[in-house]
Length: 307
Image (cartoon, rainbow, N blue to C red; front, side, top):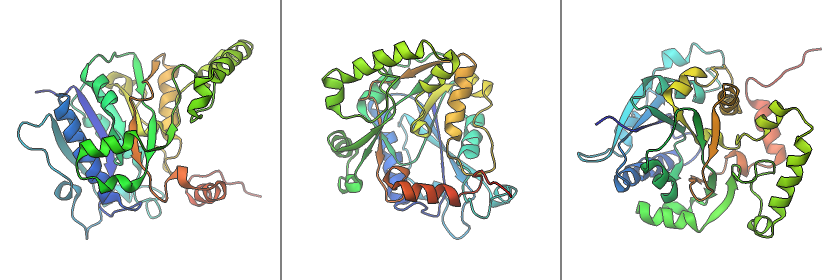
């Protein structure tokens, strides 16, 4: 059976980033469970980028579907010899967006979702995907909700999803009803009507601004590397992610801007139709302002000024 959806992600076999084995295992087990539950034929493409020679390949470590499962998994290895051709290969062991392009080009389904390996998909999100009603001229975004790593204390995916639903640390991504205001606002802000009022005021103000700039600002770019879904024709039209030889921060945003520039419509799912992201100590959202500055400073590709 041809899959309705191809899910593209990437990782390495060196347990990078802290608890990566646990996060990847939870991710794959979650996908197998959810796609079986909602009976959606799908494939997962895992790009094993620049694998460490002294570690087992990802295909030998991660959970495997069995006969009858709705999810199949394909592993594609990008060997060190390819990785070493890039300028910053010695300090960047993984080129995330270039790796995802490897998967996009080889995906079997008409609709392709690029995501990351430390997520669970909520039931409302899976319900939307099970309807199989996506359209070609649209790109789709889902909010990301960060949850505690205590989720590992639960053995079943069902219990993990239940824990995640009621233990959200923060929400990333725009509310589709309030595209003009900042994300991750307290629920009280929405329930008392302040969000609606501010969104209305900004709509009036933006009527006097450059319309193209306003449309760019309404894009849901926060955490878009965790969930961007569109038809393969759209991915091909924007030529995938820009293949820039430096750290991947904001390259996912550039893909959304390209899609919008070509006239594609943005659809943001309701906030309950989200991905759950497992919090980890070196994650961007856990860093202080000073730590973020140092993080960016140390990464190759930052703007450097010469005297």
